Image 1 (cartoon, rainbow, N blue to C red):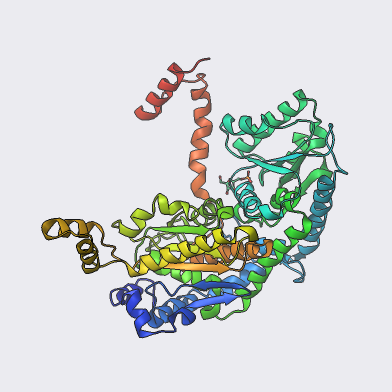
Image 2: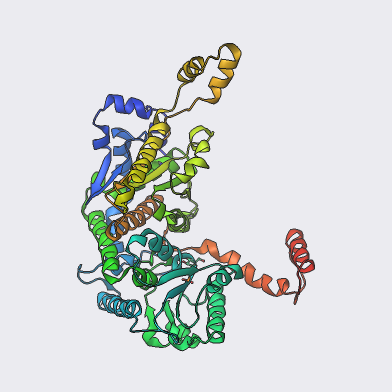
Length: 535
Ligand code: F6P
């Protein structure tokens, strides 16, 4: 069966509630677990036949071969001629991994050990700035060199016992100004994180930080470190080799938090907690490589995604962590999923005949409930929701908060599934004393269509290990969806055109070149900006 054929099954689906009536053990049958993680997809319209058909897609797409090719170092990123081996960064005791006949693990483990030593020296104050031990670390990077460590630093705040860590990504001077304003330039470590070390935002911010440090009595030669694949460029910037942490081109930016890009996280939480983060991810790799498709959590998460987006045509997917410390997870997933699978050309150059990956968005619960859940419950579009929640928080004295959080999370998926019929809404209005036309009118506003799909990922507690499992779970989910769509999830050509045009607009915005050749809208906007600029 092809993806398209699945649409015929789509027309025959029962409501989620009917599926539960028919199959009381549905929650157990339509869930997957690994370690202490439980992924429940029973509140979707996927039944046994649909699941069988979806699983059939895995074999038709040679998923097992593609997966094994990725782990073995084959150059599956065909448009860039690269291997895809972020999994090697967490392969702590998994044996050799070869690229072009060479085992990459000695280098990976050597860099990891250098990171550990450096992180512990910074944390312990044995490596210090011009004014003493480091109180603050500023990571300058964007995209994959920012979103992963920002997300993980927030997520692991209960484990944060190192210096304060700040992140500067935007080229908007407001971002760096607001952060540097609070800091002592003699006791701040700056990490410039850029795989290419050419990204304009990062290099502009790095130069600004260097000037700020020099002017404030700091010592950039000592207080700068770099994370990059481009050693020639870090050298040219003036960062000594002993403070450059490299990684190979087979680590994609959005998959890079496991290696040197995770350095600020390691400085924040320490190398032991960072190791636990890697081990969590590694355990998900082991599961992904070994489990039968039906028990394979990344595969089933991917198939639920394919069912909603490519079969049912639902254009967006909400990621709703009931975990305040995962507040940057939706943004992280936006890059992971949308930069990976937001493509309309298949690996072989043909045009995709199914929709690309969905729009991914979200916010932590319960905040989102008081903002956009109205549309999720009663809007005209069905938005599959991916809930996440821990069984317990990190604050035993606030366990009553956590119980409220958990009950809200469970209530939302239940409400989406159940809905409220017109009949039920009418009796509520009648109980309030309404009747006639007014009862009818008011009741209609209070109807919830229900039968809206959601999944829930539940975990014991947001520990470093669990965070590693969750991130690796989603990485593999994206990989599986990409294989099923037949696209290359590991390039990002779609970001290039805007970068080129920004470069060509530079001198125009500076007023050095005129707007000839630009379209009328762009020219008018440039002219407005020039007219309203103080300088
Ligand atoms: O513009 C997109 C992108 O290339 C991302 O894929 C990447 O994560 C980001 O820019 C930053 O790139 P770099 O780490 O090379 O500065």
